Image (cartoon, rainbow, N blue to C red; front, side):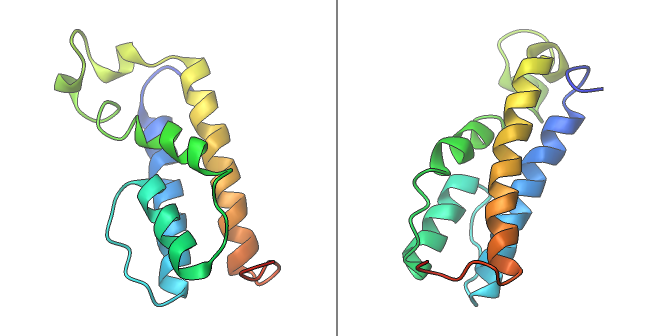
Length: 114
């Protein structure tokens, strides 16, 4: 199914966004963005943690936010025609790294500043 349509990519983006929003909420911080990069940067500001290694992965996800959902975001064709398996796999890998980071912090095994 990966690469056959944009559904896996869209779910990947949503999972990363919701995970970082949960991390912010766990710090009593309202998550005011859909951009994974902006959400991670805000988390870094309030926690003091360095998220710079995650930012390229967040950018990778953010660049697909509109084009994977809206048919008029591409100069020709539909979103499912613009995406392929390697693109989806790269996005899934980026989301997995972000989800792992969030999971480590939410389960208490990694505290801020460590």
